[in-house]
Length: 305
Image (cartoon, rainbow, N blue to C red; front, side):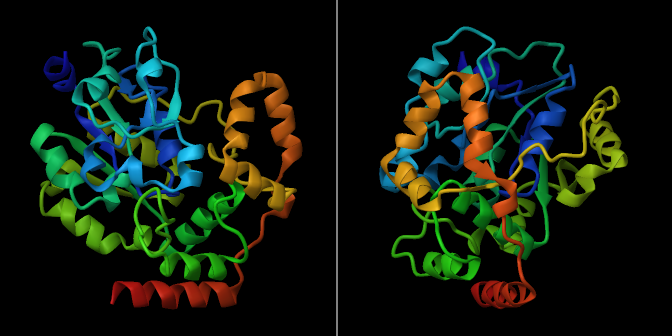
């Protein structure tokens, strides 16, 4: 099954993390000529740089690593955020729902921009693929990443405390540390992709431009899609909203033990949504200070030197 199915795959959003890839996935998926993997981030082409066996205890406790039951479900597969597939047949299963009516077939794994091995892996299997990169101000990306990691209980303290602790991690890698600075080193990451793919197959976007209608018309034309309004009926709210727990100590305990993941899976969806609205508060989200911005800029420059 794998070879025939994977020949359809011709599109990838490769990152960066916290730069609008969820918005890209959600909006493009509205187009009837687009089929995107229901597992948004399968991370298949970065598998040489990712070892789930070495993921941190907290990361393992909050991430589904066994996908056998999921992949055995009938089409259409339900949407799931992230996975770490290593088997080509499992990867191909994600695209078995694609048909001849789908001009664009692909997936969105944010690890690909960071991964040293992903460009060659993807070129080998999909040499004609169209590749989209979405970026934002690198310091803003770090702060947004920090808010997400704090929301889920992976870090604590201020952004500078979290970043400095991450810099001193004894084994910095995907799934073990946050890679706050590494994931904002766009220049070196883009250079790897530009060395492998011609410029006509790469489109670099800025996340702030995802609010503009013309961005979506241009993207659809580049992908050869019949143009349609992908923003119709959508409010101003970001697809992937932020918030921090009202109970950060408890939140870290639930995350580290995996209990939050277990409880989330066990609760009825209606009750779960009501509890999440109470458990997380947008009012608790801090804003980056000018001092923090300057310090993060200096730390990023140091990491790139």
